Image (tube, rainbow, N blue to C red; front, side, top):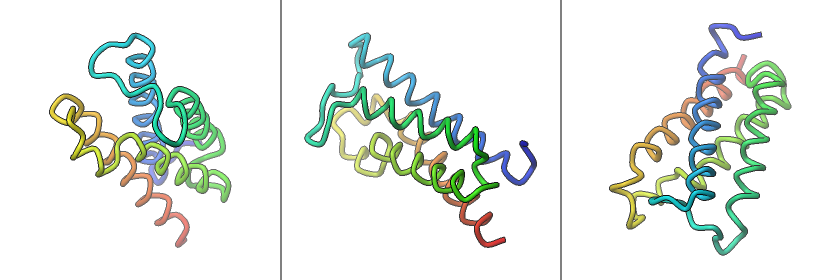
Length: 121
């Protein structure tokens, strides 16, 4: 159930989902600026699939109402920061991608704040 307490977590997770779906679509369309197809650790498309799955699972379980939901919310934020973390400020394409980087960082910070606040209560 969405309450005033966990509404920011739902909004932040939804933001990350939308950002990552757009990134995946840009990758498939090969439209600039698109993410690289691979990084040294893995291919991006399967990672985005996993990241989207974790974020949706967190929403289904309740991002602040269960231990597993809180864990998945934090995991979703951490996974998203691979694409939207502070290291992106040094990306050569930052001037083209900054709106999504800033939105992703704000969403991740909101998730951390809401989940850690819920864990304290």
